[in-house]
View 1 (tube, helix red, strand yellow):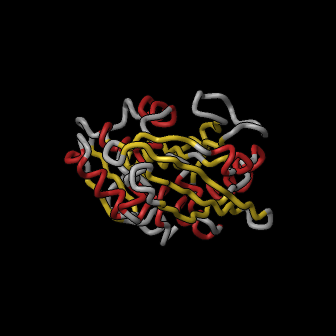
View 2 (cartoon, rainbow, N blue to C red; view 1 turned 90 degrees about the horizontal axis):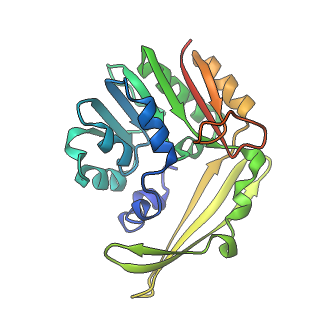
Length: 246
């Protein structure tokens, strides 16, 4: 995570919005935030959600990748957000928030149990007494990484300045650690330039997530299995806890 070029290299960060625009996860969080007067967006990336939600609210967007924050600051609505170059494991602000979100499966970049517990502690530290939090993590039982082969993942992108771009992934799963190492490749059609990054994410079972959240002093209101609001099940694509302070 600390040296992942996919997010920290401006040449690669410029593809994030092309591949990840406004999606069902952000729609769900937007509805969850209807009554929230303050929002902390941990792992805010290029700031799509934070900038949209900042109209009339106190919004803080935190991310360790300067290249992503540079994009966030320049997007419409970006000036209304307080952007922080900060790590979700160690961030400590002297304020609490009505809603804390960690979307885009960002929780999975925390590879060790101690890292995950540190993030849970950060959430607990910043939650208002009646505040809520939500994040998502892919369900390991769904084995989504099997779809991240060059053949299955190959896609054509239309970059706003680079033009047509061919993209694909490859991945290797370590069953002992639950960590998937995956590679992202972008080939720019016009120049033939190839840009690549190696990333690692952890697939954590729901029971393990429940234990570490409870240990952090957090109580669950519900567990979702997808962003359509269906309840979590063993074969659901995602694990989405919604909770508050215990």
